Image 1 (cartoon, helix red, strand yellow):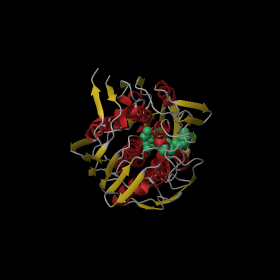
Image 2 (cartoon, rainbow, N blue to C red):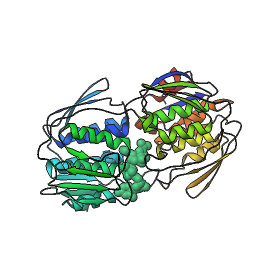
Image 3 (cartoon, rainbow, N blue to C red):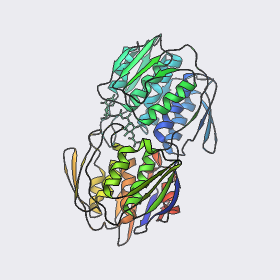
Image 4 (tube, rainbow, N blue to C red):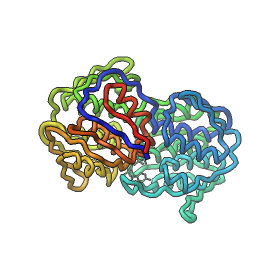
Length: 418
Ligand code: EPU
């Protein structure tokens, strides 16, 4: 298992180019199942989760050809409809195959995702919506066994705006009979990227980006060409790194419209942010102010940046309240940050962070993807020795070459193969 080793204290300077967004690439790859033919995706990041979805889909008969960040996908021969426990347990987003498989074959058997480190993460809303669209489902030895003669459009209200739930049902609805209306739909930019791809394939979709998405089913779809949006969570991670290290970083390819809540909070912290056509520049202040955050569905502050923002608050002047409203157990990084000298008290879904003058280098353990990034950020400013972050396989699921990108910005950071 690899480790990341960091000697903190370097200010970060230079330009970083963002990779494509993991959470946009995964549904785009899944959507290629909807119709046979040769699909072309651009801007696919090199990540473990992308390898996992490709592996699952290759077992269904899909073939892939990679060239740089381009991915050619051929979905002519889908001869299987099962995603096994072995693979699904390593990546919950495998549930994204349910909608496309039902739309293409009328059958799907997908291992039911269990909970994960950050919460129980049920998929009941995906299943309830599919049942309304005429899918028969039963739980069969841990598998969702689903079939339908014909998907039909339905009026669906999500009790909670669910990102992969909205994506799954959009993919099921594009070829269903009639109109599907999704109310209280998620509004994340990744939903818009998927809607663009589906429209390029011939689907009729309106309203993505709002909380009501309307989809008219069509009979025929065509192979897709689609670019993946830049990763807003990776962008936010670099922005926070610049704020923490008194850095001066140009983040190329960044979409400020995807980061409004984060930009506003980082300005309140004291960072100077200048927006350009091709990205933004963020300069860290001499003194960081404490700021409260509350995670919310888009356009609110993203839960996927909560752990990283907490690392920043650990060294800010004053106290900050961080409220996590999306996942019930997303404070697992707290005990590791405390090992580095952070002063954090948790009460239910709120953390009170009292800023310290400094963090101290320590061996720490990554517990999930975004927690890993938070510990690396803490390591970038920690003094008195080396921070060693172990269990880094979590990081590799969702950040492409993070340590290399930080090193290019001047950080003293390296990966050690263990
Ligand atoms: N929920 C239900 N029932 C459902 C679906 C969701 O109760 O059927 C609840 C969840 O338990 C959670 C809330 O609704 O409390 C929102 O969950 P959502 O379904 O939106 O999360 P997700 O689709 O499973 C995606 C991202 C996550 C990101 C969340 C929230 C992908 C592949 N994953 O997950 O990304 O945190 O949306 O924005 O898009 C990450 O990249 O590190 C990551 C965890």
